[in-house]
Image (cartoon, rainbow, N blue to C red; front, side, top):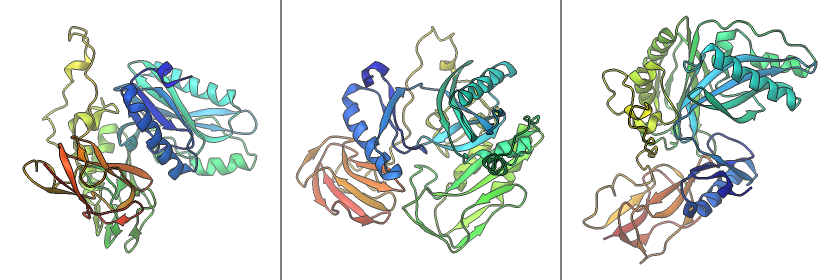
Length: 409
């Protein structure tokens, strides 16, 4: 089918992998060509495959996934669900098990659908069926044929070592019936990224303190260099407790005991996140960080957004707006009276220079395309302007703060 068959808004996704790479939200047909080109470039860079597909975009879903195990003897079991609704740049940042959004009936329907899908394709090993949940209706996204970053929350509530189970299945062994889940687990991802814009950061980790009161899966230690060629994930912190509220409290204490120096991280954002009343209420969607900008003042208590209720004259909900643009440097914001310089918000490689000196450009028009950690970031003009000196060429590697393009009114 054609993208027009899907309808707008639609989401372009990479066929070769996930993690937010090769994804673009397209609201109008005019944006389709540029979005497809960008998604294909990112997909090729990340996965060596530029094939993409389109699916209908739902504005405010919850993201819920079912953990599956299937052996070579025909047994398929579901090990409960994980809620991964809190995301930035289409990547998960907080995950929990079980989901506060599911009641027993919806949980059973979703689990049955995931098991049926795995049986239909003859799946073997550990896998995850991902769904979008809107009200009590859910829609299949994909089956991830691998271990997930967020698998520890399932391990903590079920007591099943998923990697051990993978090895046992691969060796021809059998799997047992799913155990009853115990308590609640919450995971957050500690990234080397700006806590407001989520743009990746690089540098040397000079000092690292990780907590001892929760499970920590870390991939770095003090002295390691964080470069721009790979995902900026540094460590995962996972707390388990009898109740969701206690798990969040343990995670908050663990984040207070965490310290990283030498590279910018999202630690302050994670501390803000786990204390946010909206997160504590459990009523969050994938639009959470668009409705609550990172590190913004939280309401005194969780409030229900009025547009989520039908009493509002049944008007359609407003579109989810993107978070504030990370693609305009701080020096250029608001500088409409004279010349200004757009600088690199993070270290990376100049993928494309889209303008020439002397060009007249419109507000929000992309001028330079940067690539860092397999993600593309456009550097756009904050206002109508004339392009002055261009400091970089395609293929140049730049450090954070490096001047890219001068503009003037």
